[in-house]
Image (cartoon, rainbow, N blue to C red):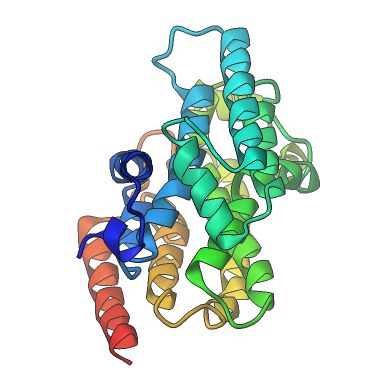
Length: 301
């Protein structure tokens, strides 16, 4: 049985929309897509839909190959966002991505405010290029990452509402790990996500980052940020046990691979300007293999 049949998605146009979301997940998600495959087939399309929505909005904002001006990007995001949010309110959509998103939100009673908050953070990326403090950054990260975790919990299934707080923390940890890895790429986009006042505590300013030369001060600042990722990951870990048993292997694997990005930053000597820290194929295979066996056991039980 394929995923769409397992999820009881039979409408032809709805199946097309879910298929497009899956394509985006497989093309851009990599680690996220790998983790999704550890879920029961009946859950996967809904995760694809949530990813497809987030990815499509992100592409409008961050497509470096685009010939659109910043204002044109802002207009495109605003128009698409307004359409999708209206579709969520009306309970139906003709958008190739929105159709699956609306169906998923209805099936799992996902609060629409999560999608509002996500799109707000995408809008922030069009005008805000740096954050003074961690508290300022959290205003962005809540919408760009924490709400993704909150959206996922109803799809994954849970036994205790404490799972939502854990999902928030894990989503934030994933995002912060990406910020650490992507300092150079974010500079290409004119942005610095690491809080400026925390960088300053280690003797780092934006100009030092712009020079893209690894210094002891930058290493010290990265170590501080890495410690935060690991702390959030540890705090979120008990919440995974509150999820449906068939979903736990997926989230454990995602936690190890996403937060494991900081391990790879350490492995390249913190030189995020010359190398892109990425999880090795061997580690992916090891984590996925272990999680696959756990997933099979959970389904049998």
